[in-house]
Amino acid sequence: MLQDITAQIDSSSFPYLATILGVTSIAGTLGWRWWKQKNRYKSLQSLPSPPKHWLLGNLPQLLAAVKQKKYFQLLFDWSQQLGPMYVYWTSHPVLVLSQAKVIEDTIVNGMRDGSLVRSQKTIKAWNDISGPILFGQNGSEWQWRRKAWNPEFTSTNLSKYLEIISQACKQVIETLKKAPPAKEVEVDPLFVELTMRVICSIVLGIPVDRKCTNHEGPPLEILKMYEAMCILSYHFLRQATGEKTWMKYLPSKNSRDYWAARRYFGDFLIPHVDLALQMREQNQTDLPQVSPLFRESMLAKIAAKEPKYDRETLIAESIELLIAGTDTTAHTLSFAVGELGLNQRVFQQARDIVDRAWQSKGCINTENLKELAYIRAIIKETLRLYSVASGSTPLEAQRDTVIEGKVIPRGTTISWSMLAAGRDPEVYANPEVFLPERWLDKSKETSSLLMIDFGSGLHRCLGEHLSMLESTLMLALLLHYFDWELVNGRSSLEELQQNLLISPSDKMPVRFRLRNWE
Image 1 (cartoon, helix red, strand yellow):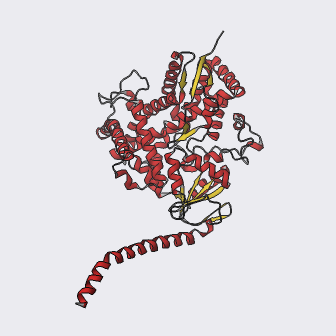
Image 2: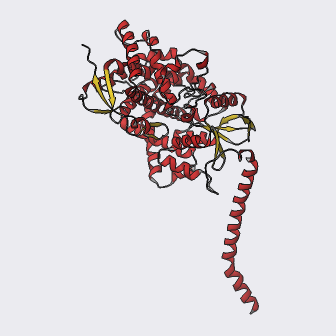
Image 3: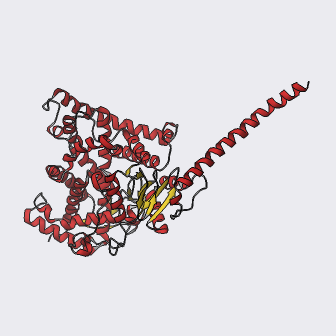
């Protein structure tokens, strides 16, 4: 009888004991992780840090900022509040730098001596956009890919694409000419179409002319393509800031959108990639279905000269290039138009330079592009104030390292706020003033100016020369043909949002007027 009662008590108590043991185990694990993190990253505890949750750290603030499209603004605001070097906490600490020279030295020196590499979390997030891409690689895998693409993006090689870029820019001019004089034109979508047509033409051989047919694959549908780009970019940002990879398999809208975007890109790119591989396998470029534009495309050239590329990696690489080659230059052009609309002195000086160059040749071509240094300075000054890619490629310390006299433990993620760095008064005098001349001044005081918006060192942006060429030509043509004013004034430059890159929330509405030539 006593044994039966004891057995009954033991049986009924088992679920409670199991629960207690489970809770104790979880608490012990969390406590151990907390102790280990605190001990390992003890040297970071003295750095400024935003208020954080006792268990989740700053992750809730970061994910909320991503959802609100204000992630870049959060890092910038923390830089303003906490100073040039601070740390926020997720599963690992993230050190954020806000001074241009410190960022430059840290990236160049750290990646040169191997003390800093791209963080594994970021690499996984990049590769989750489409598959294994150049930007999501390290070591020898990155080296042979970078070597394959480098020649295609040199300034000398890109000069042969000037006609393509010029044609795309002229289509924008014609669109604006047809707009009624008082009509508001949102320039950001217009520039998105410009840059998308250019990058699709030089990478995939798709004609920039809206009326021409793409014989190698499906037609380029600007709105659908851009929506897919935005979805994959937003997916990357969520992953990079802490969302778990497995969440893409949940039956949520974000997951459905992600997989639909990947399918869209696959359907669009597979015919182009398969044709490039067919040309490589048959060792011929004169297949009857291949247009001259496709034969000269970067995709066809890379597929032909680098046998390590296969179907999966070429599709992934193409997606990466199309995304990187669209938003960056488009949003920079929008901000440049906005600043020129509010700075009549700069506007008039830029116009005078464009007019002189135009008079010498009757157009803008490879020869008089050299005369447009002031226009390029406007682009650089725009990037300084509105760095569209404001710190989305963090690094990870492979060993204990020292930054600004502070010991940074192995495993620390190192990021930066380009918005804060561009306003660093130690590098840029009068940092809040739009002053393109600072990039042309060769005096000793300004010789230390840094242009780090395209990255630094070996990993500097492949598309830097393309972006500068495209934006310089487009801005020169706008200055030659139009006067303009911002519909919403300075708020167009202050009310920003972020998917992966920053852009004007209102899409930068502008009223254009054809110049009076009389």
